[in-house]
Image (tube, rainbow, N blue to C red):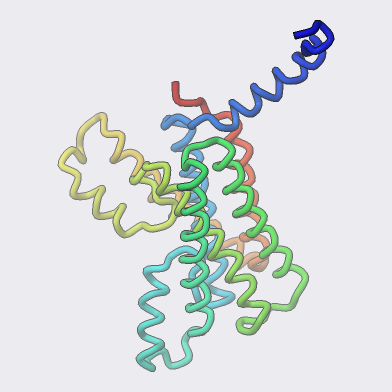
Length: 250
């Protein structure tokens, strides 16, 4: 090889930072206290979001156990117009679609890859902000195309969030479903043990999810749903930035 064909020091110096960034983004993040805290903050944001969705649209964006029950009651003609059958169906369908699309993409890219956690959470966060913007700039319509768009954005985002959380294999922090966490916590044979990380995770998850529900409910009452949905987006934004600082698996 001729000397002229060798890469110059300047070119090599440019490639080194790019290689470091690429390597950093493709690392698998470690299961540690920071990752737990991020999932707990997402759980808090989920509680805020669901407390905002139900008063406006009579459906949950994340709690699909409740939506499934209401769907069956509505199909049987027992709802007596207490809630919107269409909204329930949209939320359930969008949640499943979000879990399917984001979950399968996570499987393809790597569920613990830093860049995937950043990208997945960024998409979810932007969808939440889009829902807040629509709610802010349009009159409240409990049914119709605008309502269905807001529900779709929130529910799809929630499905993607739960799929992301489940992919991380921290099963005690689902970020959305409380029923199993309540039962798993109280049946734990080491429930009273001084050191019990799974119990601590479940209890903290339940506390943060419940706290988020209360914050969302009072924010909804004090202002309107734009405020709690925006708060949810802020919480998810913090987590998105925080993913940059997770330690990698050695």
